View 1 (tube, rainbow, N blue to C red):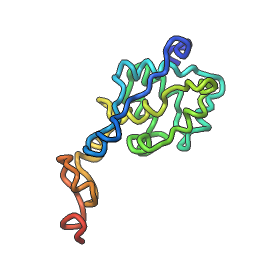
View 2: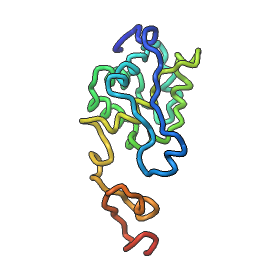
View 3: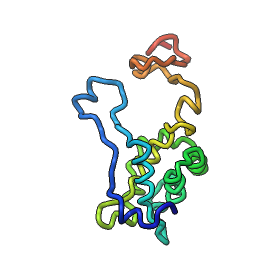
View 4: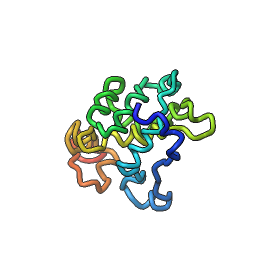
Length: 165
């Protein structure tokens, strides 16, 4: 593991969010990811415990301590490859996951777990990592409400216009 004493030296820092009133007026991303340097520090908090309970908490069985070690070492492509070994779409599932792995984290004994979800959900968007544009091109599939969102993306759909088959 990256830093055996990282959990003793580094305080938990989670990502920020836009306020709800701002979210309602925008289609833009409301999650404010941590800077790369802070992500690496947070990954260093993973303590290489003997029995990683986070594995039991993760519904897709991600290899969380190994993944955190790669993030700490700034090896995002290798970390992404590891995520893909257990999860086909980590860039999507990481965004909607309620993070039971953090609840299962040994450091959660004092309500101070590793910020696992922040790392896994940002892992897809890192340079050299995966993102929707890296994996399937910069486009949206389907012509539901997404087609009306001002994202500037082409929409691929079998329907001729939003809501019209």
